[in-house]
Image (cartoon, rainbow over all chains, first blue to last red; front, side):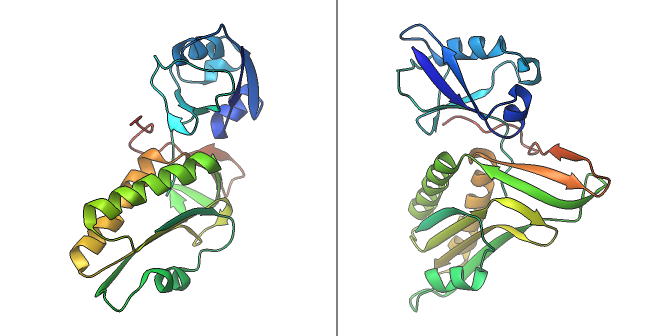
Length: 80
Length: 144
């Protein structure tokens, strides 16, 4: 399945895009997504385990992704 | 209760009017403002960006928690995005309550949670032309 991953702030700069598409096997977990992301050019500027949000909520590494999920990786937040 | 990511100047008086009520003896406010120096470097302004849909959802969840914990739904939170100059308000939180202590406690709760949970980022622009992403003192947001 193809998962579209939204990128923001410093992570968007690191990977040079506001979103990327990642090809993953069916029933892949958030952890598997992190591994796939770590192999992208520029990923050396990301932390080893970035926070992931799925469908607008922070997601645990063992969460199973489904085609059509809204996925984003979340840099350290700095609101206020 | 209302929370929003906004792009225009925050109007604190309007927010106070939105939540004040004759039954409430206290309106507590917090306004976050872009300051001129950070870590010893002169700041020209801050470019705020957000994951809008998630930021609004998370701000709404925090406001709902505060409403439940402090027994008032008279809460409004606005966070601005875009480029803000020194002295401009980036966030405003207003809570109206019958009593002052829970009003102030609710404001404090909301700003502290907002800073660690809401996906908003700031890129500081300095007077020497450089810029840098700010990482909050407490580090990354925590899943919950």
